[in-house]
Amino acid sequence: MKTNLSNFDFDLPSDLIAQKPLPERDQSRLLVVNRKKGTLSHDIFPNLSRHLIVPPLMVFNNTQVIPAKIFANLEHNGKLVELILIRKISSGIWEVLMKGKMKPGTKLNFQGSLLVGYFIKRNAERAVIEFSSQQILDDYLKNYGRMPLPPYIHRKKEDSSIIQQQDKIRYQTVFASQSGAIASPTAGLHFTKTHLKNLKANNIDMAYLTLHVGPGTFKPIRTEDFSKHEMEAEIFRITPKNWNLITESKKKGQPILAVGTTSTRALEAQVFKKPIRKTRSGSTNCFIIPGWHFKNVDHLLTNFHLPKSTLYLLVSAFCGKTLAKKAYNEAINRKYRFFSYGDAMLLL
Image 1 (cartoon, rainbow, N blue to C red):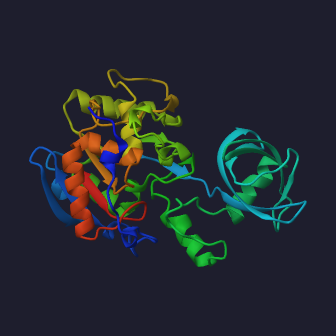
Image 2 (cartoon, one colour; image 1 turned 135 degrees about the vertical axis):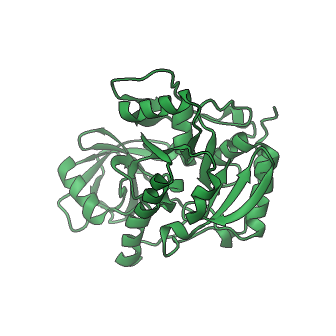
Image 3 (cartoon, rainbow, N blue to C red; image 1 turned 60 degrees about the vertical axis):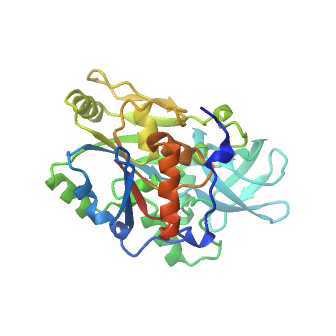
C-alpha cells in the first residue's frame, strides 16, 4: 500500500467551505455512498433512516465544546493576543495555543475581569499559562469565551454578539454533555432532538461515548509518507451501560453506525468482547489510514473533510481511495457544503 499523501489531494473551491450553519440543523444535504455496489445517491438529512434498512446501533460522541477562545492584553506593551485553551494541567494551569514571543512571568490582563494570567513557558505553538484562579477563569469563559472554530471558518474579534451566540449554540451538538473538547464532533451537528426521537421510533438503537476532540484531529500531516505522521492522544470515556450496548450489538450481528470520525476512532481503539462493570477510560492516538481493518464500525456518518487530512484518509480507508475520490468529486460538482458547518455523507 502506497502511503504518498499527494495521492489524497483534491481541488476544493473556497466558496464551498460553509462559513455559517444552515437556518435549521437537520436541513443539510446527504450524499449516500454504497460501498458494496460502489454507487452514490443524493438525499436530504431528515431522510437518513430510509437508508438504514437493517436498524443499526448508532454511536454518538457526547463531548461538549468549551468556549475556549479568549483574548488578553500583554501588560508591558498592551498588545492584544488570542489564546485557545487546550488542556488543563492542574487547577488554574493550562496548556494553550498562542502565538508570539514572551518572557517567563509576562503578565496577561483580561478586560472587564479580575482574571490575570502569567506566561510560564513555550513549546512550539503551545504555551503554558498560570491563571490567577480556576474559578474566575471558568466564569470568564462562560461570559466572554468564544467557540474555538476551525481557522477555515472566518470570524473577526469585532463580530457581533449575535454571531458569537449563534456559534455557541450551533457549534455544539444537542446531546453534548461531557465538557472537554476544543472542536465539535461535527457529524453530530445535523441532529435535532426531534430527529433523534424519530430515529428511536424507527427502532434505531443509540449509544454514547466521549472522545474529547483536541488539536491533534486537525494537525496537518507534514510528511509525504503519511504513515510517519503521529496522531496526538485524545481522552476517551465509555460507561458500562454504553460499552455493554455496543458489545451486545456486536454479539447479535447488529450493524454499528459511527456518527463521525471521532466516534469511529474511539470505537476502533477498543475490543468489545465482554461486558464491563467499571467505566473504561484512557487516551487514544488511533490513526486510521488506507489498509486499516475495521473491526467495530459497519457504517459511517460524516461531513466532508479537508484534502490531505487525517480525516480524509480515514474516509478513504473506510470506503477505498477510488470510491472516496468519486464521492468527493460528485460532492464538489453538485456544490455540497464542506467542513464543520457543511453537509453530510453516509457510508454504508
